[in-house]
Image (cartoon, rainbow, N blue to C red; front, side, top):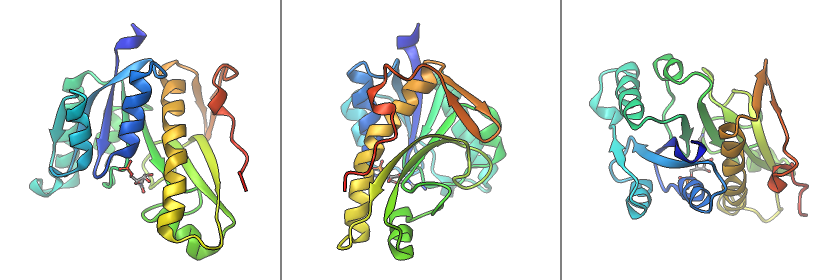
Length: 218
Ligand code: GAR
């Protein structure tokens, strides 16, 4: 049953993308539900958001493990126990190893606050601002072994204003993240994505109004 598809969401902080995913699922815009929120930080606000919706949570503290592989193996165990069909990284600030990737092949998504392949890693909005680009944005992509290098599913463009600070630009990008992450999840769970090399082909997106790569609004 599509409605029962379980999504595991990994967070390290505020979890506003997690909230957008929960809300979209509750509105029936995603054919699945968040069945686990896992964090590497016990005080991540994303865990509180999950509890507010009665969603099970787990904390796997990376500092408690001797290697990245051991940490990843513990996360894999928790995610497998949840029965998740899809794993979504949403502001999860750890680089995962092949132990994690191989456990969920082609089933892990990530969101990044820049128009990849520009400005991967941390502080995407700050990097874009300092570089001087006129447009930045956000990207949902499949996770692979690199840092923010996996095949791209959806992107949204956000104009950079001359009076932007890292904070104002990041806030406008975040708003678009909340719009495109649920769209990418829906496409995945409805089986509309095919990966061909680096390219992700999407089938039958006409009924998804938000799928179009929106033009800049300024
Ligand atoms: C988001 O902007 C997300 O794209 C970014 O962290 C923020 C988390 O916000 N992720 C990265 O930079 C990963 N490289 P949230 O916790 O409110 O969803």
